[in-house]
Amino acid sequence: MVAIEWLSQLIGSGILSLVPPLLAIALAIATRRPMLALFLGIWSGAIIHTGGHGIAQTFDWIVAAIIVDDGFHVQILVFTLLLGSGVALIWRLGGAIAVRNWATNRLETQQTVGLTTWGLGIAMFFDDYANTAIVGSTMREISDQLRISREKLAYIVDSTAAPVATLGISSWVAFQLSLIGSAYEEMGVAGEAPTAFATFVRSIPYNTYALLAIVMVGIVVYTGRDYGEMLDAEHRARTTGAVNREGAQPLQKVEEDLGEPIDERPMLRTFFAPVVVLVAVTLAGAFWTGYQSWQSSQAEAGAPTAFGAAVNDAGFTQVLIDVVGAGSFATALIWGSFAMVVTAIAIGLAYGLFDIGEGVETVIDGFGIMLTAVTILVLAWTISSVAETLGTGEYVATVAEPYLSEALLPVLILFVAAFVAFTMGSSWATMGLVTPIAVRVAYEFGSGFELVPVAVGAVFSGAIFGDHASPISDTTVLSATFSGADLIDHVRTQLPYALTVFLVVVGCYLLNGYLGVPPIVFLPLGVVVLVGLVVGLSELDAGRKGLEPVATEPVVSGPEPEGEIDADSTGGDE
Image (cartoon, rainbow, N blue to C red):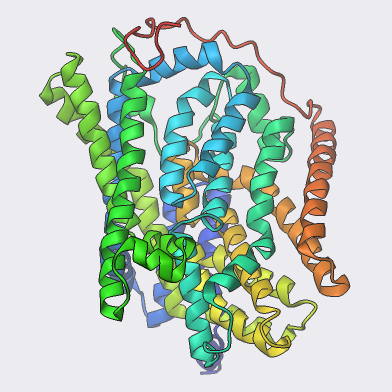
């Protein structure tokens, strides 16, 4: 009886809500078997929730995670499978060979490839899913040719995708604006508060982790310096050519699963044309769905439905954010990936590289290379639902709230958001949970609304860091998938860099809270500190391991080209 009462008290206190996500994360890192770890984490949550064996509840949660949010997750799964088919078709058509031959002559150093990848990631600010898919798939063959480890590519992709999405015109920003506006309305201060957009703009300098994470990628790529397990991965790739470690389990294994490509006539257009169509159709689709939804909302509110009239009324930036925010990026991604598949098949048929039967077989093979990633995505979404059902986020926020003070406010919010995101594996769920609490606390602590932008920025910073550090995050899974990396290898190599940035962010917040140092000072100071830490830690770790802090630049002759690039192609005959 005593044991039962004690267990009931634990369940009531909420502390057991931490068990499922922490168990899944610990097992995933320790065993390097994320699917097993996630399933056991879900099952443990079902046992806690039901008080029984929990098998039925486990599968109920898995099914619910797939069909939740009006089919949003189903749309992401369809997009992922179609993109796998697009990648398979490009491989089959010899696009990878063409890109390798082209890159050998033009992108001669790892630094150039790394900076190109970083720049593409910043440019794809409109959606983090599209960012990881497009940048990872585009740069994977090129980085392989220059002996950049898959772990390094996954880090560049992952640590750019979500941060830039929180700063540019994207679905993320629209979601953030809705959270801020809803928090003001729930507090009953919407009439006197600044607009949600004004609060968001003022919060950008305090979204310090996102800003410095992007800068950190640039520093690491430009200097070529690494530390932690990334140093080992880069030395392995550059000295042996093995872009993945021996025994790694990449979430996408194109070469092994699809066999040899057609090497008779490698053309750059077989690579770039499908990718360009993917980007163009996705952007157009997002804007079109957003415009349609925005017009409906404007009509319901009795506001102008013509774009020009609305701009005159609310300003161009606000209208553009409203349109982009109303867009269905999941739908647009499906359209874009389908158009990518159709384009690749059309090229194959037009140039006589395969017949329609072979094209369809390749599409099906492309579904196959994504099955591991799709399975992990579903399980990651499910563990997030488990944490939400058990009240993990609410428990963490409740425990931390009594320790808040004005000077420590951003630091404590940062830690709470980071832990919630780490355990739930979702930046959006974290922002949705923590933002209303943070806005209310900041309003009560400060004189008016002065501290609200600081608190909002700290929520976003913590949410993105937790997302980067967690192996159960969907963007972490997708970054590893489209970069062709082992999921746990990606997490283990990225974590030291994410922690470095996180600690610098804590220092910036403390300077601001205790000494009143403004962002215009602590942000440049943070960049300088990051440079110093990268140099110092790389020297220290390399000396400890008997390696060079900058992995030796190989002379990349690569294998002999398996065919000249077709002169009638994107790259010409240079």
